[in-house]
Length: 124
Image (tube, rainbow, N blue to C red; front, side, top):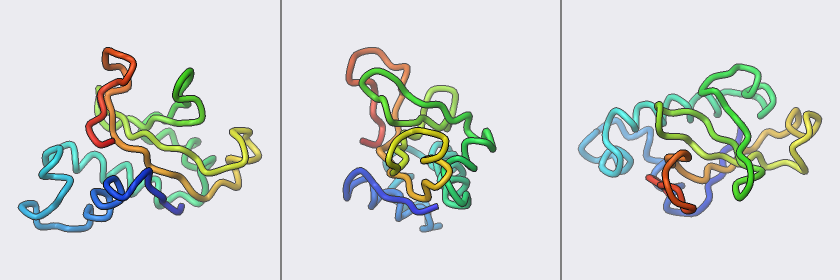
């Protein structure tokens, strides 16, 4: 699957996931080594899928659609509290559209269950 990013900041952090030197890795500096390892695992799984519908059927990360103010976005579980927030780049969210959706946009990492209307973004 093709990966796009919400903005250049998010792109810079995710593009640095291949940097194996922990002391220089931008995401490790921002969120720590354990969480970065979990984010990279989900990122690699998404990238390996041919389309978004296939990824959804794997159940990896327990992907779920979000509602209300985040309608159109999906969460992918990184840990018990943290979620990778992604948006399928498709015409709509119908099964037919998701079956041909070969691009997602990474919005960031957040605690979707956090208090407050803005939630708790770790990587906005």
